[in-house]
Image 1 (cartoon, rainbow, N blue to C red):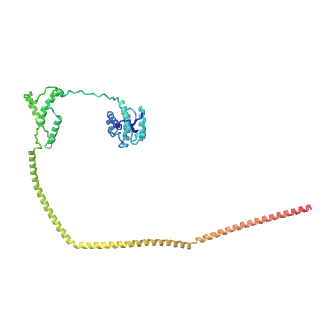
Image 2 (cartoon, helix red, strand yellow; image 1 turned 135 degrees about the vertical axis):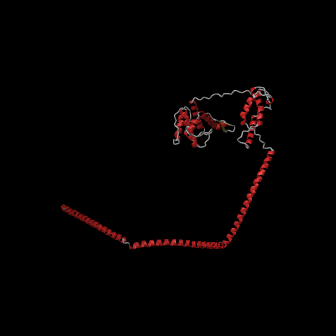
Image 3 (cartoon, rainbow, N blue to C red; image 1 turned 180 degrees about the horizontal axis):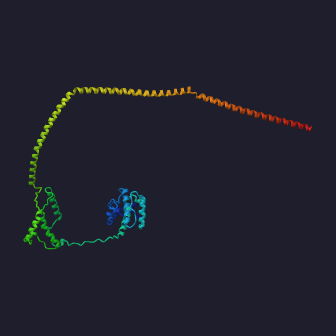
Length: 426
């Protein structure tokens, strides 16, 4: 790919791409969503495979990598199957790394050039994921022989404005009529919700204006209903039709809420109702006030009686509280002294235990005959060693004496030989 950067006057380099390139992934994701709709993925993927439906930006941004990766693997497997390639439906226990490698391998077998590693697909979102799914969706559409047809332009109807001159007074504003009928129906619901209301004013306007629209659409001359003086309808048929429709018709003339007379009557009605309710409420409130006052008086009287009866007990209770406070203070003071004495007792007990241990060790050493036995054994061992040494000394002395005797004999023999040799020379 050529260098996508261009140099500007200041020497800095800027990417030679469209400012909207960062949003291309959303466009591709929207195209993928439309292709999935064409592949009937709602029934075959969502319903049969029991998978969650994806939105139009599901793989465009990272929201939940775990769920997105599982959805990508499952959707890829489904698209492989739609494209005529055998690919097992993944489960949650399968190794996702192995599944991603299999998806990339199968994708390359389809003839698509791709240099994406499995690590880039592990997030489950981004351009690489959307690109793979788009190519798989294209292959699936080719497998079912789907072709895009050219758009068909609908036949244009003749414009009503060109059929004749416009009459502003007879032109129907449908939105305005719908709004007026909706407002009137809403106001009527406050009085009769379940009854059908026939708005005579709107029907009259509609009857006066409908002929002009029909005439404009059919390119016929305009005829005003008020100019028709004679009717061609059979009177007998008209009466039969009226008798048939009459039970279903009900005309209701409702008063405008903005009319001050209706509000005046309503105000007087409310005033009479409030006056009637106020009398009952005043009687009830008066009775409640009397009962509450009597109850409060009884409570006050009994409280005073109880206080008068319990004055001595209350005074005694206060005295006992004072004595208890003094006893607690004395107890805290004594407890502090007991703590110090307890520490001293613990220290003395430890020293006494140490002295007792030393005395026990000394007594055991005095009365114990073990050292004497050891000394006797050592003396006997020394005596045996002395005897062995004496024997060795005697042996050495005997050996030395023999060697001296042997030397002396040898010396005597040499001397005798010498003397004999001298005598022979003489």
